[in-house]
Image (cartoon, rainbow, N blue to C red; front, top):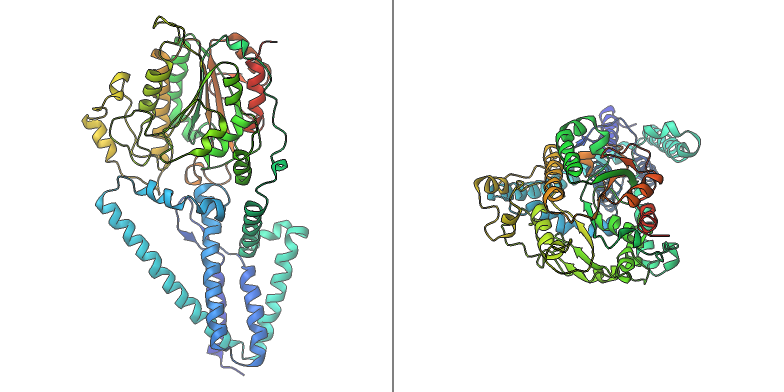
Length: 539
């Protein structure tokens, strides 16, 4: 019989390994937090090692292979429990992995030397941490292997492993409350990711998966030739309404926005919609509204762009509108943009902004709107002495995008932000130097929302085309470190206009007066597409 120290070492090894495979997340940080849960993966590996030990001491290859497998399981478990805390949704290795480099650039844009040194130190720490983790796990496997040479220890480990696997497998079907005793399964994560990868690579050409497109065969006569401006407000989620602290912080800015709408002779009606994405992936929300099709699955988005499905943009173009994609967030070639049917696609380089860059996203929303107003919207009422073609504009904003800093100040003089000397004052220089905080993003997020309400207020009060229909719609909830655990996927939508026909039709379909829409949501974001087609048509 083995000595008591060997038995205790085996028990301690199992405890350490289970801790490494069952920890939770210390929301809203990136740090792990101990959790009293059981790892199914450890039970499966303990069962395998017990069977291997029947032949004697564990061979070196078994120890090395088991250590590597356990290390990979710990890393995957960390990703599995941290991604929902940070993003607010499940990680998709295939699709999210394609944006890792851009996320790193976004987080380090305009970073100080100190910040870059800190990031380098953090990366070095990760590498050293993985080496230390591998060493600890290997020592645990060696200790466990030694303990398994005792018949009693082996029988006990074998029995507990079988019982754990049975309970963990049967709990989801027969005893759901028991699931809380088990850590999220790495095996289930791998199965899910394999399914996502299989659908992404081998079912990318089945257009039937998109479903049926809505009909775009109505006229636009109810608009009377007025401009329609769709502002996709980045990360403007229902959390700004549902979280009492957020709502109180934004109350004054919302009140000013509401007052500017009324003072301009317009009205606003609002509702809630379910976004197809959470914490990122804005293009899925944009494409769902513009196509009227379900875009929860990134594969559907890729399939949509390869199709010839109708879009809201092409619907307006067919009725004589000039269609403009005003896209300050696009900083590289975007050939897929041709799918929508825009007559003009203005990316970050084509917008005409000449001021300093505010972080990775470069162009403040007010400056982007000022350029849009000057280049496309001025003269809407014939004040330039000519009749111009009505516009449909799709404008996804960027200043409320993570990491929420640096944030430009609102400038009352809209002409000033179009010049080369825009944002040259001391306040702007200081704003550009503000450090990004990934650990405490909520204050910065709320500041960007106040900025959004401020520039929208100023634009509606002094510059927006008089008869325009302005649609302000959130694309998704903010990242999980802002929205918190368990947040829904709802976003607000506001329609601002003086067009009584449009307002009345939207009210009849569930929109409410004001800027504070209560639940429930009218439906998914794609439900708004046929609603708008109907509201803009004259029977």
